[in-house]
Length: 336
Ligand code: ATP
Ligand code: MG
Image 1 (cartoon, protein in one colour):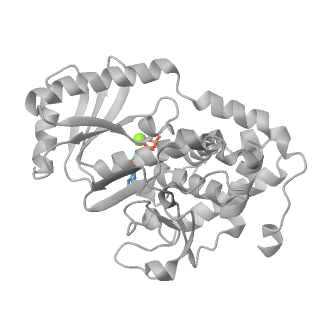
Image 2 (cartoon, helix red, strand yellow; image 1 turned 90 degrees about the horizontal axis):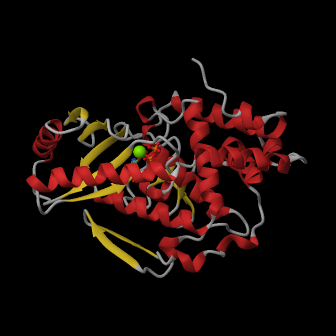
């Protein structure tokens, strides 16, 4: 590992820029798709407001954070009175939506986050609706704001998400990481480059402050003022993809450290008391949620899936270093 951690990037790395950018471009959702998402949201608003005139619908997740690739599902949050019984609202909501032009309406009341799932035949878009998950709306804004600072974040995140989906390591129910976790890994990685490509918005003077579920969320959100923040760093997307996988394959200290977008730095597992297994939380790869800081997004990872994940990082790092055609090999589907 020590030998590999000092490995130099391949000499012809920039030959890979054009093909990586082409992959990125091909994943960007077309404008029509955005219009269809709006159309579905408007329909949902109309149906919901009849029953709950005070309630509001918010888009969150990748469709709102700008990290959504084409043909993604959309995530919607129904924000209403905090005292309601979520399961009851979920059932009622499913009932209302069922009776209209929507298909495959299912109420999942027993999930960790209860949701209604549905498909809109008019647009072909699938949608998950949750209740009062306002923290997710706020972390979506943080991600979107980071994406506006330097385009290399969105490029890197699209490539990493595409890799994770192709290789089967974007499945939280199988012990691998969520898309949200991968985007945080990309943000943290770009905060750590020297010169830095991204700042740490939560360490700057707060221009946006909200309190959600007793958590104060505060950060600098005038990101249009930061549009040349990363310009002193000239690394290209191919170099960054190489360095990202190299870091997670050979350099990250899984035993002792936590990545933290909130502080723009690495924290020690000891100071967070994330050193032992408590219940189902094992902390084998530690990714601090930027607002709910007691929440480790790596907690879904178990002793089997950590091995899978690390082997995939190593595979990707080796392909980036030695393979003649990484832009194909990297994304070859994993077949069990
Ligand atoms: P995809 O394009 O794969 O659907 P996504 O960004 O929508 O990606 P998800 O992992 O489905 O990613 O998460 C949707 C949103 O829910 C995230 O953007 C985030 O706001 C929130 N979220 C997801 N997982 C967590 C979590 N473990 N803790 C807090 N918020 C989360
Ligand atoms: Mg989503």
